[in-house]
Length: 334
Image: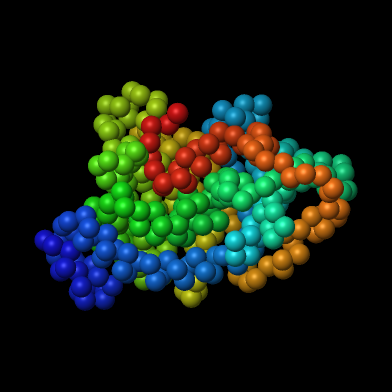
C-alpha cells in the first residue's frame, strides 16, 4: 500500500492503520518528516534552554577496570541555545554513601571552549585547557559524551529529524503498536545503498505526547543471528527514555538508559542516567565564562586539537557515543 493512504487517516498526523509499513522509501520519509518535524522542533526549542541535574551510572566498561568496570558521576548541564556547560563530579561508592572525589567543568560559551578542574580537597578551579572550537569538535564531543541531554528527540546527541533528512538515509516504514497500554509509532530506517554507513534500526515515538522518543534499537545491516551470537564485534544498540507521566505540555525526562544486547534480556555496557532535576528556562550567559569559576582570563594562545586527551576517564564511552552520534548508526563495534 502506497504512503499516500496515510493522509488524514486515523490520528490526523499521517499514519495508516491499514498497513503497518509504507511503500516507497521516499514516500515514507516525506510522510514521517511532515508529521514529526513540527513536534520535534518544539521539543528541541525547549530543551535548548534548560538546566539538568542527573546521576549517571556506567557498568561493564573495560575503561574503568580499577573500579570493577563501574563509574558513577553526578552532572549538572546548562544549555543556552548553542552554548553548553557540563559540571561533572566523580563519585566514589563507600557502602551506601557516594563520596565526591573530583570536579571537571567542560564549557562551550560565547568566548570559546575550555576545560577546568579541581580536586575534592581544593576550593578553587584550575584551567586545564582552552580550545579553538570554530570547527565544533569540542562541542560535538560534549554532546557525544552526554548524549542524554537530547534524548527526547535524538538519543545519541544528534537530532533525529536532521539524521532522517540526510539523502542517504531511508525511512522503511511506520506502524502503530501498543506498549504497556500506550499507543506508539514505530519508525524503521536504514542506510541507503551507496552510503558509507551500513546501519538499520527503529525508533518508537509517543505521538500523543509530542512525538517524544520512548525507545530505539539499531544494528549493522549485515548482522545475522549467528554473527550476533558468535562475533563480539556485533551487538544491538538499545536505548529507552522514561518521563513524568503527569501530562506536562513538554514532557520531562526522568531516566535515560543505554545498553548493548547480544542476546535477549542480557544488557552489556550499560549506562543509566537518573534525572534529579530538570528546569526549562534561559541560563545566564555569565555561567559559560571563566569568571563564573573564579578563573582569570589567561594571557596565552588558544590551544587546538588536544581535547581527546582530556577525556581519558571516559574514552571508551566517548568513542561509542561519537560513533553513534555521527549518524545515529549501529555498526560493528570496534
